[in-house]
Length: 268
Image 1 (tube, one colour):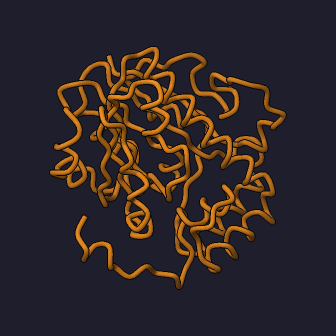
Image 2 (cartoon, one colour; image 1 turned 90 degrees about the vertical axis):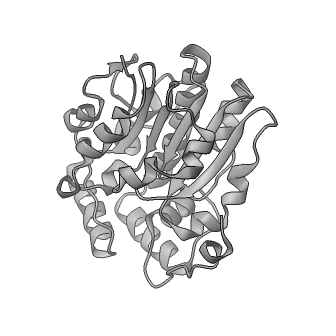
């Protein structure tokens, strides 16, 4: 990280999805413009706070499953968002202390807090790169990524609540294909994605709110989310609502409240 990057101005004139997500999770790293937009979403979809929590919980469970049951020791987490403990590397390194994690995000505010993402175990490594999922080549060519990840060994690609910010016009499936193409057999994709399947009218309102705030979104059906896993071996229970993917406790949330399709696939 350079000082010039750290000094980049943060645009507070319009809401940002990462900072709105921080608000949903009860964080403090957002601005009034983000709070106002997030509360507008919450007025249309009060369960957005449940959705955000269940998304985070899925990431924790998927990370532990990949570390414990599938020998994954490396992660590439794109769309990291503002750090909220426990972060992915803390979950992974609690299972395998030697785990290596590269975080990537395109929001300079995340860069400001990225030091939190660097607190690795002595045996492992973590780093943060500023990159955009819409430019996978630049992301994969980052020298910082090459310093931490060995792309000749399995890597888990973690895309949590990210791809609904990539519309069909931006070729979301092609982007995921390109990211997975450089990863070897035994690598994994862990993905969560908001869906209108359980309440189309409400999610149309959410779509309008984000789009009108300058952040185009495209929430997808279960069938469309499953396309991201084309060619991969899906782990049980397949594409499932977030709180139903390998639950480690009881949840009283409904499918409509969570409205999040999740899945984990292994590259043959």
